[in-house]
Image 1 (cartoon, protein in one colour):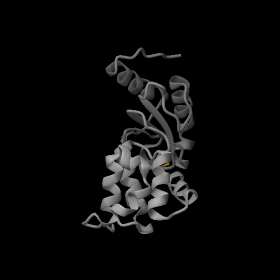
Image 2 (image 1 turned 90 degrees about the vertical axis):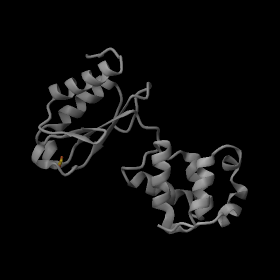
Image 3 (image 1 turned 120 degrees about the horizontal axis):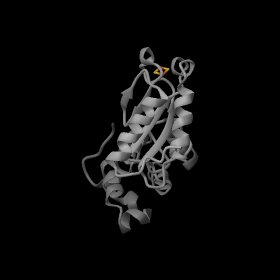
Length: 180
Ligand code: FES
């Protein structure tokens, strides 16, 4: 990780309208890192952690700062599953559709999830509570089929188990269960 310990990158902010106006996080970020291409991933990690996703306007600022084409940054953000282009829900539910889980019926779990939450993989519910994702092998094939909630693994999963977990979360959040 290439960081600089002074403010010599401040000049890089001259054209950064958003930073000058209000986005102190970005200003700090651009003062912390040198404008070098090798810093892209680490900076994206910090951006993802701060915003919960990588907003398009931030990609534009990053493109300008690192002198990397937007298309390249967009390509990196969409390649790695840990980066997201949209705000994430409070509960990120991922269903593994890797081979071991798929042959044990994980598609049924995904189908139930999309049916109950009325969104597709990659989307977030309007209330900002849930995001659905599909993953490829989370390294727990022995427990297939598997789904995770905010990284917590539920193995030997069933549609009933998913329903139970969703019900518990909804109850906790004061929502009606909305089971169809
Ligand atoms: S295929 Fe699902 S955990 Fe490996």
